[in-house]
Image 1: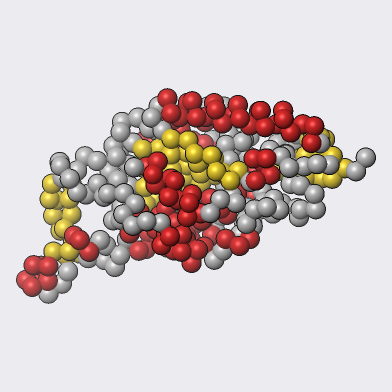
Image 2: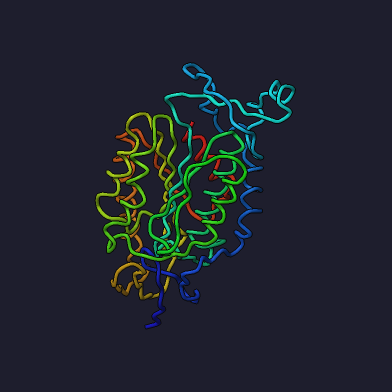
Length: 314
């Protein structure tokens, strides 16, 4: 019997694939700054309207202009009066901040033969491109992680050109580490403060394979969609995980946990049925609370992925 070894979040790395690395396997998805800008440029202009316009918005004073601020809110009269630029600020009960949550647990480090990069690399590119689109639309952006390197930190919500640089720096400095099932506080660290801070109108995009999250994760994430907040959950799967392409006997070793299973193509139907059941469970929970569920694979063009996410936000 020809047995090949494989490791992934669901089980299999496929024949002949290299061993999984904790550092992000960017493949063809790097350099992140350049690729994220390219993806953002490929997305249609005006991804979503800024919450700073419309009924119920009131003038809230001025602040000094900083590079990257939306030029629509420049007060040109201040330049004539004070010889320096000021930006008009507005107050509203709504908040159009984009809060990105990227799963950086160990299973997200997987990359199969058909993928341009690891799952966390693809998720990072999509997250960075979304940040770029939001900032160009005048909306602030924040970033958090589920798992990842213990030393890594998220990015507080902020706007302007520097916000994009901070998001990219945080993503580039991340690594695929941790087990959200074993670390019971990992989900709370990622979602607790976000759920408390996000106000009505804010947008939360979660990018995760959803394969090794604790049982309460669907309800925890769906609950964020209350009080007028927009939640989009993107399931990021490697093509191997979506199709189970193995035709020979493989030994599947879990990246998160200690499970080992020896199987072959005869298990494909059972595996795909279990995956469909997992996806339907997430979809039912999320849609029932007003959130969106978008399954995607890492061989999908990032421009198409970002457009689909933006459509779900709108």
